[in-house]
Image (tube, rainbow, N blue to C red; front, side):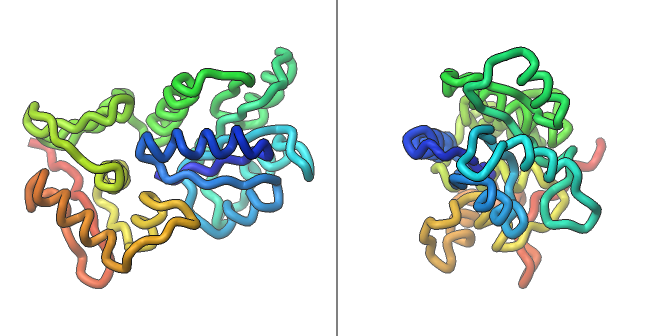
Length: 230
């Protein structure tokens, strides 16, 4: 999953980026509102971490702009793009304005990064319509908090990229994801990757989780089928 960090403090932004990548997310940084809007209107993003005090304006203006989109625009609609505010503004009225303005959560700096990760997981879980913290599919179970993957109750060791790819397909069950969308879920904007990287990751996942889990639509992409009721 791709997370956009909108933060002008380089140390904070890079620290968050490294933490998120270690957790299996693709993470990218925008240092101001203009850069952030450029990313949101041109690239797929699964969640946003939004600072408010930015060099070219207040992050609340970006929040309002995203939440006021018309159908057909590139940025995802309000119910489908988790946006978490992270700011030094700790007054209750500021929190009320941020949450009423459409933020999914509001964290006051300095915050514990583990709490941020937990709140991010919760926001992503709400977006996907899951009540359980686990992502389950047949005999497969994924715990995003611990990144533990179990197949028929037995742990499966996945690399960071393999894990990210698996989660992206599990969260879009029944939907064919093309190469560009899968690359966006696994790699950041500036990261280099081999032309067959996705195919290699899919091959490894099939070897570890079974050949029947991931299906190929030739010339289009890959998907995990929805489970059919018994």
